[in-house]
Length: 236
Figure 1 (spheres, rainbow, N blue to C red):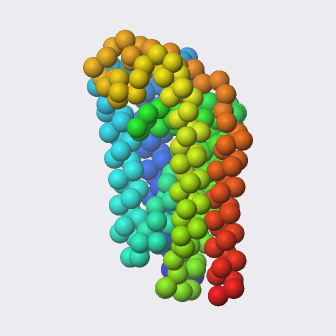
Figure 2: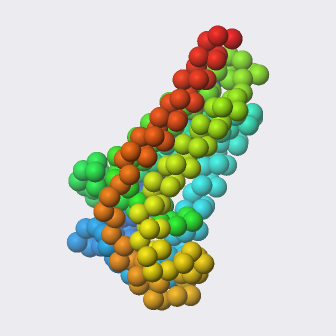
């Protein structure tokens, strides 16, 4: 158990520090583009800045994956550490923003969550809920793996986690995709860098509704997987 605590402590510190870097970038961007405070619709940015942001997000995922790979040896433990550091990073990203900017004013405030492969949006509370679920799942996997080196997730558990994840991605990307498909086909959306008209239309996107029913369905699938895992291990 001490080894698990050590892994969670040091990878958690890494994620907290990384979250500060992420929030610092947001502070700089908002000082440049949103001096009166961030809100939708978005402001038009230089295309180089947009491309840089996309690659920065990709680099963030690579960093989180790397720390998971070097922290533990087994594939399932690496998966657990990855979702753990991702969750800690995401939670502390908002904690740092509150401390640095006093934002968000509410858990229901809309936020721009991600840009890969398209824009993700949602109320702040939604990714925070996801993050606490991921921490819970990660800790359980690491404990079970420590007690039994043969521990694996079975097909049903993977299926539930993957289905729930795709459902979450759909919930977060649906508002933007629906908005864009009203005017542009997907083939043109991918080539936004070469289309100023499309880019101008995209930045005028303003999220209105969030699919809480689908969000809760995704959370249900996550917990179904976790409960099935716990019952299976208990019986074993």
